[in-house]
Image 1 (cartoon, rainbow, N blue to C red):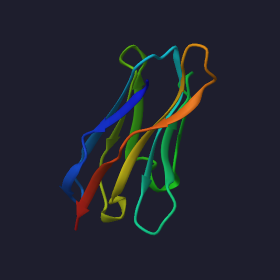
Image 2: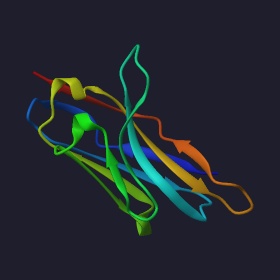
Image 3: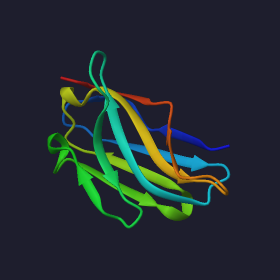
Image 4: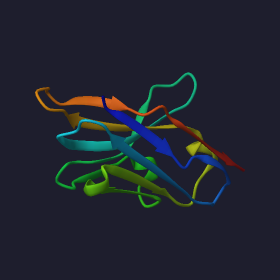
Length: 120
């Protein structure tokens, strides 16, 4: 069984920083793309940042220059460093990982979400 667990959310003032972490565990053969999404009530979940298995990175326009995604393959982890936070960054942040298990095709796994609140 595969688990994806996020940590690092919280309350921060505008202009501050937070670092989100996400670790995958279980019967994992390989991890392809990993990414961070966010969702606010009443809106669609949106991609914030993604990193492929080969290290190719993409960001939502709204976070370019402020957020940095990275991954540690040995730890099966992905991180999101968030700087210069704005109130509009307030959301529940979800980790996503495309994971292949033995004898199974690759599938997307989601974490439970972590709340990020930015006060003005």
